[in-house]
Image 1 (cartoon, rainbow, N blue to C red):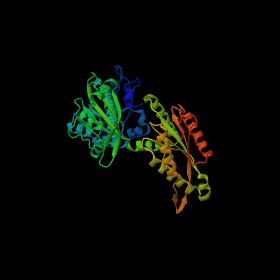
Image 2 (image 1 turned 180 degrees about the vertical axis):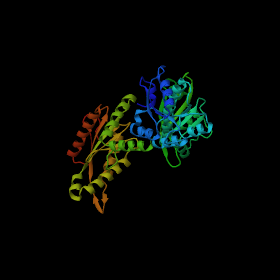
Image 3 (image 1 turned 45 degrees about the horizontal axis):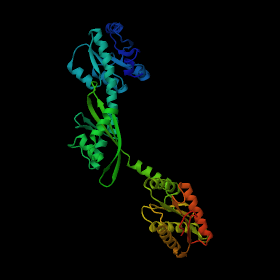
Image 4 (image 1 turned 30 degrees about the vertical axis):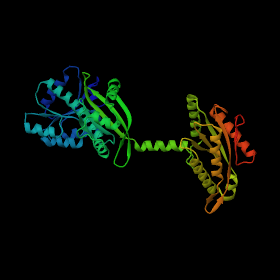
Length: 435
């Protein structure tokens, strides 16, 4: 149990009294027997050596030390300093026979929480012990908070109720130096305007008023890169409910966001060609259906299978086959618009989503361009390789109205193209104007 917990519970405050004068010991015993809501457990040693031994072996069993500086084995301020060297983390209240300002000042500087002149009124002794324990606990908390404030990589700044900068840690200073945001003369709302690129302090203030906190990802420009920061704001109120401080915390999550984006890209793109994979293509197909229904538009899906690719792998090996696939992917990308989607579905199967158009003449023109491009010789390591492609077409909403049906209809049309000699385009049989 820590010192503060002891004072806030029914547990007695555990005092180690270091005193060798019997009369003074009895006076202190009497003071601790007074009943005023706080109870004390007193243990007595009569020398510095015994005090150090008790604290070294049973430090957790004491909440405070009541120390006489004049002991049989130690005298003056050295008594406190020696005790502190062995047991630094426990509050100490000094007992002195006379009020000596220099001695008291030295004792406080050496780490004593308080001092008492022997023979003072008992309640003064109990009060001194009580507040010494509290001050020690609060000082520990303050030191810990200050250490965390200064060593954390989280940038922290404190603003007063008028939004003026009050305190910042080293991480905040370094972050501000690396970006164009400055706190030399700016108020909090100015800084937020820069961080969020808009005057939105009133919105944030409303959130802080309602929830006490606010969180948002923001982007700032450093000298040589763009940083993504997680900004958290907290409102700290006084007991009467009025604002005391605003606290801003900024964490640089740039690398985390890059890693997330990389994983997301890897999950949605083909590793060999860099094209969208089947999963991403399916998502875009679904989105195209939603948009086309909303705006009364049509679009087409081209299912492409390379003719003769297996022979390339069998003859020249998979390394050459991979390069052929990469060249084919580049050619298909160059043959369609940026708004269209080229995807590798599996092996030598590809698909092209032609948005906002299912006019046969336009689709046939695109398909013919793809056939000619894919049929052109591919030169790899002085090897000239010639392949072709079979293309099947389905359109929305004429042939199908769901992603699965569109893929199925285009796949069936592609196999029809293969049956009819390959290196050609075939529309789904439901289309009114096949190629």
